[in-house]
Length: 333
Image 1 (cartoon, rainbow, N blue to C red):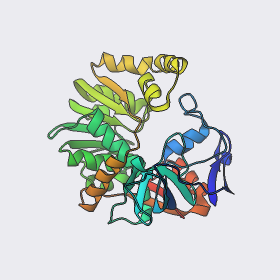
Image 2 (cartoon, rainbow, N blue to C red; image 1 turned 30 degrees about the vertical axis):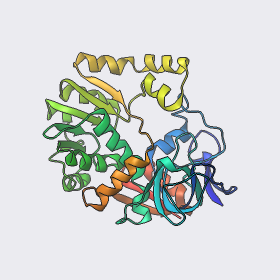
Image 3 (cartoon, one colour; image 1 turned 60 degrees about the vertical axis):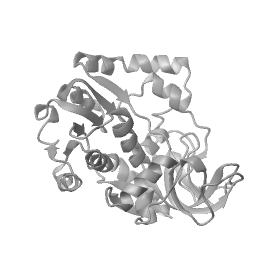
């Protein structure tokens, strides 16, 4: 079968299309014929080696974090799915494998595709959707009437986070370019700061929570706009030692290195009297089913920026890495 394979750590040339053996579903697993797959910043960060401290992969390896397709075969003991089911998934972080004709995924992290979506739109939902849902629900515990700031609201995670926060009853402020402002307002954001002309810390204050998607100075500035005792959750800052241990089984040396590296950001948060957490999303079939339900009810809209044919996946990554996509970038088989 054809697959996009990560051969080493490095630049775009570290990934290539090649033929590899077709995988076989083991116990508790489903074999999915991949119809489309989403591209994510985490994919090229893994390729660049940015995650090597917490996640070392045996290479070469079929890359890719999320997919949509049809169940081709089921392994022993599978009870949730049957051949022909339309499914989507954020695949196992340690195995990857979404950028291929076929992928094997544990049934517990597979969800039934929203009936109202085609494969391309469904493929861009799992990773970003799970990230946004788990950060807002589990880490920030947003409730009705609270005000939340979400940086980079027009991106892949941002477009879903804005909608999920509104669904939870929160009032949303976000940053966007002039081109992205109409989009995020249509998704429910009530306050939109043009990051090219204003700093959000000069506009916002006394917010109940912040969800940082952009990192850097935006992460540090988010502490200044929060009420004392509030929390910023980030997917773009440094992982915390607890994250590395729980999500990747990192040892004490890695945990100690992360503790030292992240000391400055935690110190800044304490100065403002606020909390800081890093979010690694967890693959979850149950959470995917919830997202699918919200999509089919019309509560949650997927935003797909561009769809490329699988043969042009290198071009799709080059486009994604420019950082200007509004919504998700997807490849279709």
